[in-house]
Image 1 (cartoon, one colour):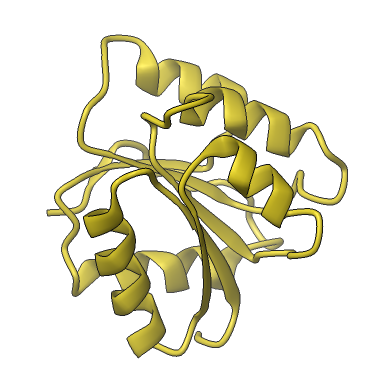
Image 2 (image 1 turned 60 degrees about the vertical axis):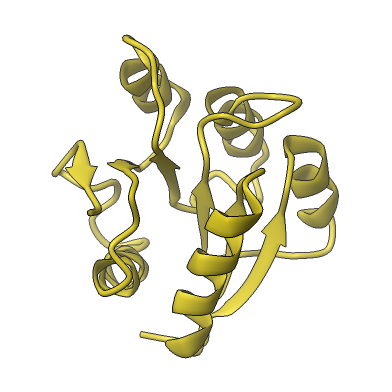
Length: 138
């Protein structure tokens, strides 16, 4: 699958650039946000099919932002994939409780990322969140 709109939320410019480039090569329509507030503002006029979100953001962490996004009826069914290189004990459990649909670890495998995104988009609306938790993208 390609062509679907994807939102990437990450405060690290290198991560944003890499993830955006990898997905654009596969023809996904990518928008980016550097913070939770920027993402919430962007979501006023943009309806992504999937969100890739860093756990550590400068204003609100990815877990809380997941909670905020999933609380809005128009976004409750959008898969949110936490993509992080740093997490503390309990962060993954908090992310699942907040409604994230997958939790993967950096570094990003540029060959695996489009497959992961495509897999989520294919099953969106059919069988719900991934049954496989704690994938590592390396």
